[in-house]
Length: 419
Image (cartoon, rainbow, N blue to C red; front, side, top):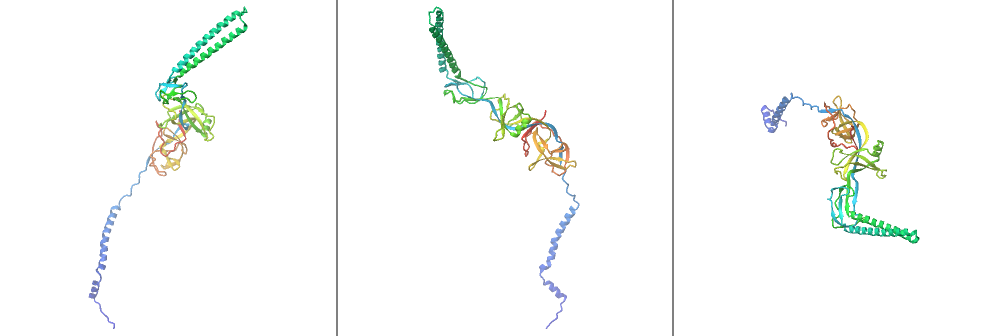
């Protein structure tokens, strides 16, 4: 049967006490965790609510200047080698034994200077024999001449036959021929004695000796090589030029006698001066190049055959060019750029076509105007499209040419300031 029970307050309190203790303590724990968080957040808000905004980056300061306008002379650039104006292989003209050597390997010798001595005694003996033959021939000629004179005096009295006179005349002619032959043998033997001393045929720097004293040497074709001599003052500079450069030089009338300037591999300026001396009579059909040669003085014998050099040939063309420091050239992949500043202070990059370097300044063939303000100092901080503050700068040639800046490819031509 159904029974109704009445619950009192005491029963409700007993029911509350019967619940798990963790359920009752959970809100209290949440309150203790949230309280520190609220305190920290309030403190941060109170300390930072009045802080100023971060300061903006200062505007970069750069130096700008208009490009330098100067008249320059254009040159064409070539690479070649130095060659001796004369090169001689010293070989003996008589055979014999080397008895003395009169030079030091590698020294400068003068034409006619003794180099080697070949034992002259056999040639001196042959010369003495030839001179004795001359004396015999002279005696025979004197006797034949005397007999002919005597016969001619007797012809008028018919004491001598005409045939005898003719025979005596022939004998005189034979004696004269014998004397001439004997005299020629004397000159030949005298030359052999002279050739026993091998002398320098030209002035120049001598190589090392190829044979020592005491060895036998042979004359004639394919004779023993004793040493070589190269004439070094003046000296040649041989080079090959392309057909395009050849046509350019021809149209500019830069022919024989045109000035050239040469620098060595370890030099920064073109200190060696010369003139164009020779141009070949045709182009090589295989390479499309033509061989040419310049000549220059070498009084101190510093330049040596086989040495490389860079040469520039004046085409005579003078142009009005715009120049900027080579350090102001920027590289953007395959393009070359110059940073300029507009009137409102905006950095504007301009693609340019480069020319040669003149005393540290790069010739700008196109892409730049006289009125442009070029960034010459502070290019690292000038960002294309950004704003900069400008200060006046100056563009001037360097006293000593500077090397090409990294990333900029040198042109195939050269230039110098016109004077």
